[in-house]
Length: 60
Image 1 (cartoon, one colour):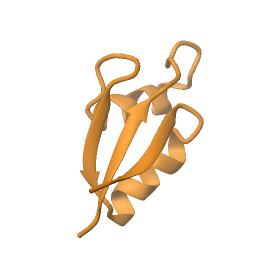
Image 2: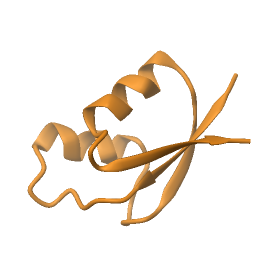
Image 3: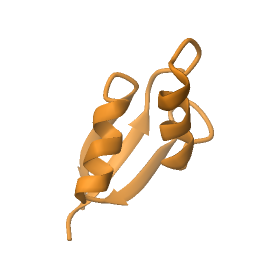
């Protein structure tokens, strides 16, 4: 299964509560922090909700 490196590049200040909850559920704690997640439909859905706040790359 492929992996994705997701980086939080924009603050959640002013974001909707659903978006803040999604960022927290993805495991982010600070701005510019990164997490590596499996490339699954669930992960893709989470990325779609907060696509304007994160940067997504392939993790190898």
